[in-house]
Length: 162
Ligand SMILES: CC(C)(COP(=O)(O)OP(=O)(O)OC[C@H]1O[C@@H](n2cnc3c(N)ncnc32)[C@H](O)[C@@H]1OP(=O)(O)O)[C@@H](O)C(=O)NCCC(=O)NCCS
Image 1 (spheres, rainbow, N blue to C red):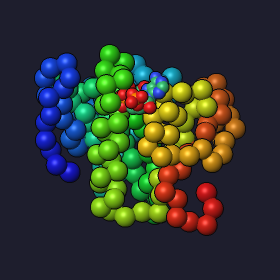
Image 2: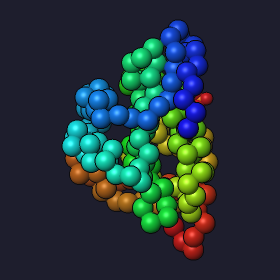
Image 3: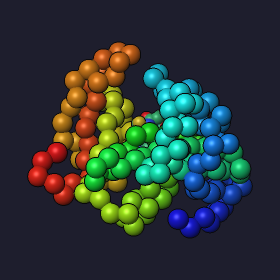
């Protein structure tokens, strides 16, 4: 990954870089503000310790504005978590994180990308659609807090069935 800061539209520098253990306090705080079922800091720590994973943050003016976490299971990339802190949304930060993610996964090889997203999550599903993900099915009652269904989405699947 090229680490190159670019000017942010509202000033400061914008940089996508690998997540570090020292980022986890800030990342976990954004996670708690964002999700009704937030990952615990221990889950982030465990994920960062895995060698197969991709964990990136986007800094704007040296503040962490968002992050993405993904991992390869068998030969498929699973986009496991992406969030942008509320004040930074609609500034293409998630898009920039996903572009960096796709650049890395293209180098490593795979048979596709998959994810789950709440059926009610329009920002999430529209973000994924804009990157070519297609909804292929539903996992009924997937989310343990309110039993909302998850939409299963795939991109570039090269196997027999999804
Ligand atoms: C989903 C989320 C990560 C998007 O982050 P973001 O930085 O605001 O998104 P971007 O500005 O990069 O948007 C890229 C594209 O996604 C789509 N999109 C993003 N937010 C949208 C919204 N609120 N409504 C409709 N489409 C949206 C658009 O196609 C957008 O492109 P455009 O701005 O050129 O129209 C952010 O809203 C968020 O953190 N939500 C809470 C956590 C979450 O739902 N994560 C995903 C499911 S796990």
